[in-house]
Image (cartoon, rainbow, N blue to C red):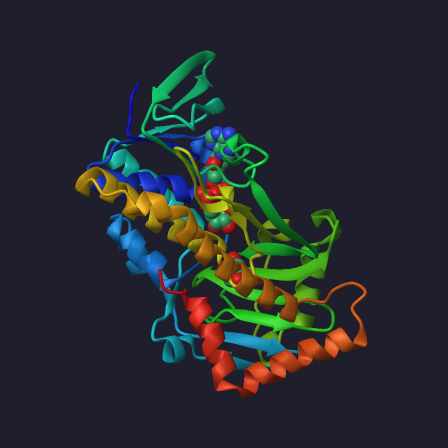
Length: 389
Ligand code: APR
Ligand code: PHB
C-alpha cells in the first residue's frame, strides 16, 4: 500500500488531520490501535478555543457543533466563599464553545466514513521505519497478518503512550516534565448544569470545577490526593465535597443525581522536543500533556494540526517547504505558552501538600489581584480564548 501521509493514531489529532488533508486532495491512511468503540467511549474536556472551532468548520465537521454546542462568553472564578466573573468575550473579543471531545471524535469518524477515508482500527504492533530517509514506511499487524504502507511523511498522532515519539533517538529527544501532587476526580451526571459559564473554584479543601455538556448533562470535578481511587468516592461523598467547595450561591441551586461516569486523572505538564525528526512529525498528546486547568489539551492538538495541515498542503499544492521546515519551531512555541498558562492556572487554584502559609497567601493574593485588575483579567482571557496561531 502507498499513501502520502501515514497517520499513526485515530484520536482527535489524527482524524482531524486526515479529514483536512483529504479535502485538499492529500491522501492519508490512519492506523489506530484500539477499536472504534473504545476511542468513542473516552470522555475528555470540552471547551474549544475560537481557532479550534474554525478549524473544525474548515474540516466540514462544524454543523452539529454550531447547532448543539454552547457558546460561552465568560468564566467564573470561585474564591472561597464568593466568586467573580471574567468576561472573556468582552476582553478578548471572542467567545469559547462548549462541545465535548466525544462528539468531535464521532463527527470526525462519520466524516471520514462518508468521504471513504482509510481508518484502520485494531492495528497492532504499529512500527514506523526509515524515518530519517526519503522513503519512510510503517508496518502493522491486523488479524495476524503483517501489512506495510509506504509514504512521504509520518504524522505521530498517537497520544502520550504512543510509539511515534519513541522512534526519535534518545540523544535527540529532550523531555520536560512536572507531575503535580494531586489528581482530579471527575463525574458526569444527567442533571441540569449548575452554571453555563465554567466555574474554576479555589477552596481551602482543594480545587473544584463545574462544567457541562448540554442542558441535562453536567461535568464536575474535585481535586483529590495523589494515589486516591474512585472506590473511595461514593456519589454522596462526591456531592458533599463538591458542594462545600463551590460558591454558596451556586451550592444552593446545585441539582445532584447518580453519576454515569466517574474517574480520577493525574495532572502533569510534559513537553517533548523536537516536534519533527526526519520525516516524522509529532502532533497533539504525542508531544505534550497539559494539566486540564484551562482545557488546553484538545486545543493544542488542534493548533499542531493547523500548522501541519498548512505545511503539508503547501508542500503538495504549492511545492513550498517553508512550513515543513518551521513546523517544529512554530508548534513548540505555542505549546510552551499554553504550558505556561495551564501551569500558572493550576498552581494558583490547587492546594499543594506541604504548602507553607506564605505559599497560601501568595495564591490568595494572586486571586485578589485577578479580581481587581483588568490587565490581569485580560491576560487570562487572551490565553483562555486561545493565543493567535
Ligand atoms: N499505534 C496506533 N495507535 C495508537 C498507538 C499505537 N502504538 N498508541 C496510541 N494510539 C492511539 C490511541 O489509541 C488513541 O486513539 O492514538 C490515539 C491518540 O489519541 P489521544 O490520546 O486522544 O491524543 P490526540 O489525538 O493527540 O488528542 C489530544 O486528547 O488526550 C486528549 O487532552 C487531550 O484533548 C486532548 C486530545
Ligand atoms: C470539562 O468540561 O471537562 C472541562 C472544562 C474546563 C476545563 C477542564 C475540563 O478546564
